[in-house]
Amino acid sequence: MTARLHLVDQRTEAMPVILEVSALSKRFSTNGIAPVGVLQDICFSVRRGEMICFLGRSGCGKSTLLKILAGFIRSSSGAVQLNGRPVGRPGPDRCVVFQEDALFPWLTVKENIAFGLKGRKLSRRVRDREVDRFIGLVGLDGFADYLPQAISGGMKQRVSLARVLILQPEVLLMDEPFAALDAQTREEMQNLLLDLWKKFSYTVLFVTHDVNEAVLLADRIILMDKNPGRIREDISIDLPRPRHKGSERYFERCRAMMTKVNQV
Ligand SMILES: Nc1ncnc2c1ncn2[C@@H]1O[C@H](COP(=O)(O)OP(=O)(O)OP(=O)(O)O)[C@@H](O)[C@H]1O
Ligand SMILES: [Mg+2]
View 1 (tube, protein in one colour):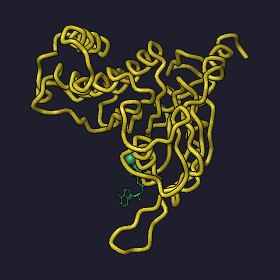
View 2 (cartoon, protein in one colour):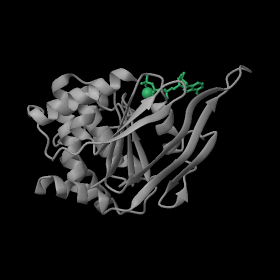
View 3 (tube, helix red, strand yellow):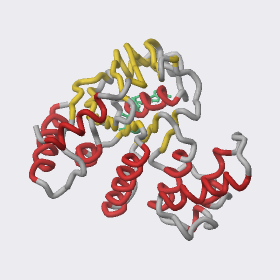
View 4 (cartoon, helix red, strand yellow):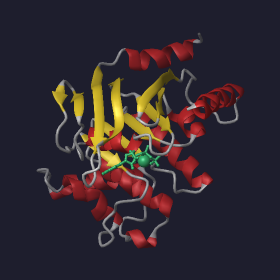
């Protein structure tokens, strides 16, 4: 094990567990039809600052799991605890970024980013300073007064990211946030996410279909089975950071992961 790799392991192993999911199941009943089990016996824990990616076939329940963690829907059984407390309703400690941007079309970039701060007792000066800081952090200097319709898809996702990061959530939940972007923009967004993650040590749960993306980002990849959605394997990605897409080791990890994904 290289010194660098050792450091990477220590970074998360020294951190406390903040999110604990135990024996979580979800069944959906629609129109009197017998309930369908979507998630079954999901168990995992996440340490503060970890980046976890979820991979699995379409319909295996990845979005459902994220919605339960966000508090948008309830599980049928099992428990989710954040910092030792049960997760119920949505809260500012868990923020979600979706594939499609969820910006308010009538608000400017600056107003969209400031929106979540409304309930907080901040002076206008402090709020404006924070908004400017996050506009800069996501690389949108000069676009503060643009409406969403006047910026590109990649820029909208930058706004989506700034809008949740400014709330300083404990856990960032991301559901295929870069899936609709072209390859180059996607890579820029991956690098931006990694830069911000390094700077602020967020805990990130990231759903993707892209094996290369998962290997680039993740400390751990949770591979899911379908019908019902279950955890098939929880795999540590012990590649040193920063990771280089051109490197032999990265390529090898992607190939090995692709083999596992194809067996699901
Ligand atoms: N509100 C709902 N009512 C009934 N069934 C639902 C509901 N939401 C999701 N499902 C079902 O749960 C299963 C899992 O859906 P989910 O969207 O979580 O999958 P996913 O892994 O995110 O898929 P994808 O990769 O395509 O986004 C699907 O069969 C879906 O039809
Ligand atoms: Mg989904």
